Image 1 (cartoon, helix red, strand yellow):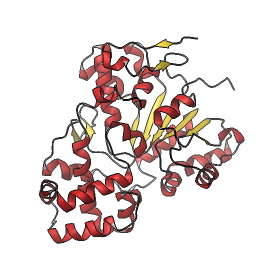
Image 2 (tube, helix red, strand yellow):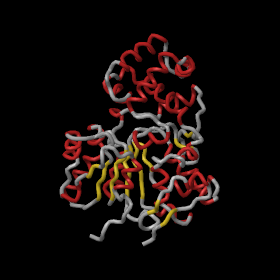
Image 3 (cartoon, helix red, strand yellow):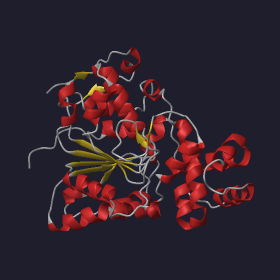
Image 4 (tube, one colour):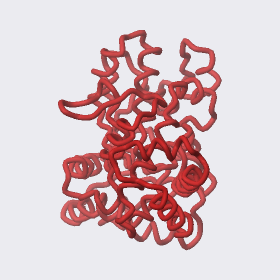
Length: 345
C-alpha cells in the first residue's frame, strides 16, 4: 500500500504536513455534503456570525449602506433600520433562517448577504489556506493525487449549501501551480468533478460557467451591479425547490456514492428532508450498504441522538456515524478514514 508525504513546489504547502493515506486517488465513489462550517477555515463566517456582521455593517458602515442602496432595489434608511432591528432581535441562527419567516425582507436580506460575503472572497486564499492546520481542502486535494491527465478520474463530488466559491477557487489555483498547466486546462479538468450549489452562489467562478450563466472572478471587487447579480443568484431555504436540476443531481450523487460525508453542516431539518428523503425512499426498496459519516463539531448529547434518528436507513450498514464534537472538518476527515477504499461486497 502506497504511503507517503506529498511534496509540492511551494514551501508553504509543505507546512501543512498532510499524509496521504491508501491509494493516491479517490477510488470509491465519494460525495461531500457541505455546510457553512466547511468554508469557515477559508475566512467565510458561520450563520450567526454572518448575521451579526451584517447587522453591524447596517448600523455603522456607510460604505456598506451606500453599496446596497446603489442596487436596483428601493432601499431607504427606514427600511434598513427596520430590517436590522428585526434581524438582530430575532434570535435566529442565520440570516437565511430569519428570511424564511420574514419574506417581506427577502430582497434587502439577499443584497446584504451578497455585500457581506463578496469582500471575503480573497485572492490570497490558497497561500493562507496552505498555512492553516484546518485546511481540509489541502488534505482532500492530496488524496486526489494523480497524473494531471487522470485528475478528473477521481470519484469525488460535492454538494454545497454555501454561496461562496472557495472550494472551486482552491482546486483551480492548486491545480495550476501543482501541475504547471494553464487556467483553461485546469478548468477543463475540474469541470468534470461535480460541485453542486443547492442554494445558488456568488456567480459561477469564471471559466466554469455555462451559456447565459452569470460569472465572476474570485475577488473582493464591489459594484452595485455585481451585488445585485449575486443576490439574484441566492436562494433562501424555503425558495430552494427539491425538484430543481441541482437537487435532482444531488439526489443522484448521494445515491450512487459508497461514501457519504457531511462536513460543517447544521442539520437543518428542512435541508435534510429535501436532500435526503428521496434517497431514503429509494433505500427502502433497495438495500445499498454505504459508509455514511457526518461531522458534529459542537453537537453533543440529545442533539446527536436526534440527528442519528433522522438518518435511519433501511439497514444497519446505512446509518450515519457522527464525529467527535470537538473535531473541525480537517480533524474529522482524517480521524474517520473517509478516503479508505470500502471492502468488496
